[in-house]
Amino acid sequence: MNIREQKEAADALRIAALVYEHSSEAMMVTDAANHILSINPAFTRITGYGFEEVAGRNPQCMSSGRHDALFYRQMWDSLLAKGTWCGEVWNRRKNGEEYPEWLTINTITAPDGSVQRYLAQFSDITEKKRTEETIWRQANFDSLTGLPNRRLLIERLGHEMRKAERSGLSVAALFIDLDDFKQVNDVFGHDIGDLLLVEASRRIASHLRATDIVARLSGDEFVAVLPDFSHIGDIERVVQDVLQALARPFLLVHETAFVSASIGVAFYPQDVSSAEELIRYADQAMYAAKGAGRNRHCYFTAAMQQQSVERMRLVQDLRVAIEKKQLRLHFQPVVDLADGSVLKAEALVRWQHPERGMVGPGAFIQVAEETGLIAPIGDWVFCEAARWASRWSVLTGKTFQVSVNKSPLQFLAPKSLSWADHLCSLGLPGQAIVVEITEGVLLNASGDVDRQLQTYRDAGMQIAIDDFGTGYSSMAYLKKFAIDYLKIDRSFIRDMATNEDDRAIAETIILMARRLGIKVIAEGIETEEQKALLRAAGCQYGQGYLFSHPLPPEKFETLLQAGYPEPGIIHAEISAQPQLIGL
Ligand code: C2E
Ligand code: MG
Ligand code: MG
Image 1: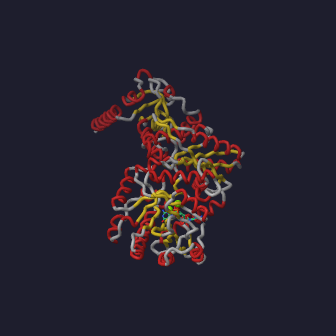
Image 2: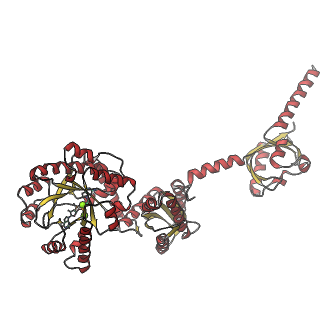
Image 3: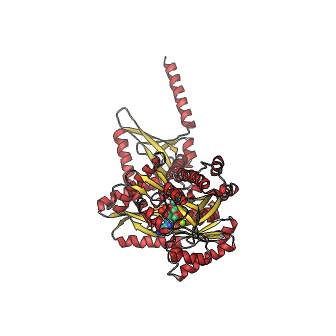
């Protein structure tokens, strides 16, 4: 019996020894005074120390110095009270390298309760920590600029707001959006665009204190958080510095790019109560800065909040406007200045809102562009315009030409209706439609825009440049894209009778266009004097209140049937027209 027990005990010991020898966890046994008695091979593997180098020494010899006295006191308190402790410890290897380990210490006591041995087991968690760190970085930082992302921004902002609550100071959020960044991407490509973003983030950060936060939200949107400032003047100075820094040229590889920035500023606790709200309100203020002309800043105001609520309502209403048949097309005649005849009209969209009345395009086109609703609205406008063009061609016995405005955003929208196919199905010649685009469309022309314009040409449709003179006004583009009409912007026509420069500009545009074989339409003619000047300068077509306001199709048709009456008669028609309202 005794021998069998002895043999079993010996077997158990042998197994224990095997485990000790081959465990991947480091093990170390110390005596009651914490002097090292034994270590296993995994210990040597992790720490680099052999047994003879640590035998009899206190494990303190491996400490990294990262933990303070309190940390070790709490470890010993737990060991004495509960007989066990576990946690993360930074130690130092024999080669001097610091590393994190997950350590468990257990106390082995004699039958009388006194401490006999301590058994420490640990594993090296360097790799695990590295993976965790990578995952954490990916979740919290933007990989391009290395700046915190929205998630980390919200977290840190929350922290700063709680601090501000205690200190009674304020937190400012600057929402920074680059102006014209898309153009940099389009013109120079995304690699250069990326370089610009990195440089922009560096420039923004260089004007902030170490305690401020800069984050990249997306694309070309950055947020800077300035905690505990006491003077609005401090914010003003930072904002001006950042604006100036971003307006300086960016030298990127062999290219020089120019952008500027629009900045919106909101304050906690003055304006908002939560981190998300602070960013949203600063965003709204940024939006106002863009609207006011870019390369500037705006502070958040209650009125902006009101506007944003209105805008949200507008978006909701606009979503159902087509379905509920609330959109209307009005037509403004384009008059042949030589003989006063009308064989063209511009289609202008309106929205018969159930509560607001007749809403002009100025109040909803931009929102439609931002929400993507411009694509279905644009298609509706086109179909409606084609329908009337077809009818009036029959009525006048000639191809009646209707022009439709096409927003730059429509060129980017995913393909919906093919305008060329639609004309085919109506049996309408392409010449019945003129597509009005702005100069920006040509300037940013990607292959896609080029192709779309080409399909219009192929279908016989014509192209007009709207609001000419307000953008880049590049004659080279006009030639390259085979433009049919130029529409001189109203601003030049308005003052041409009184302002020499505007008159010179209008006359020069007419002259150059004629030389290029492009027809000219003067927009916004309101007086006989303007009309006479334009005629004298050789302008073929005119459009404006002098001839007629935009009219509902039925009224426009009456006008067509009557031939072209005197301006005064049409004005009488207009007084019956519902007043357009803006928002
Ligand atoms: P636009 O294409 O330059 O259209 C001319 C604008 O000038 C029209 O304003 C017209 O009513 C106004 N106008 C015409 N003659 C005179 C005049 O003698 N004096 C003055 N002061 N104004 C005159 P409306 O209808 O408010 O349209 C504004 C802008 O909205 C248009 O400018 C166009 O860019 C855009 N828009 C209109 N309809 C559409 C549409 O269906 N799609 C798109 N994408 N944009 C549209
Ligand atoms: Mg137009
Ligand atoms: Mg125009």
